Length: 119
Image 1 (cartoon, rainbow, N blue to C red):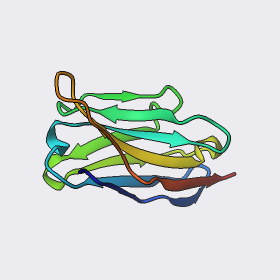
Image 2: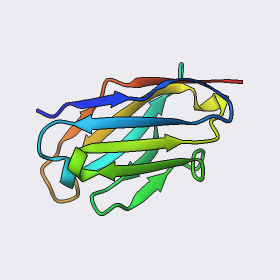
Image 3: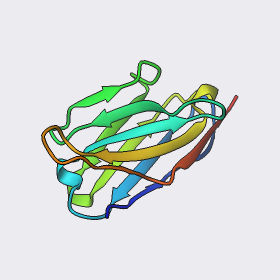
Image 4: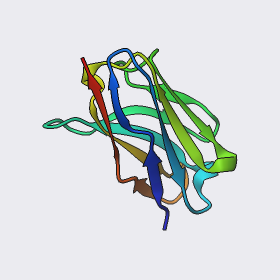
């Protein structure tokens, strides 16, 4: 069983920055595709950014150029650096780990961390 533990959320003013961290237990981190998702009140969960084992990244249009996803395989940790935050970035942010293509299916979620951006 894999556990994902997020940290780094909080409250910040518009234009500020936060860095989220997600540390995974177990031994699948190195091969996993890791991602950050978010869910605002009354809205569906949406993709924010992903990073695969090769380091290739993908971003939602709404955060591209402001957010950066990275991973440290030695620490089993994925990060989300969020700059130039906007009130519309307010949401619960979730970490996700899932199988790479061609591997048996798995899909794990963290408990979520709240990010609140005030105007």
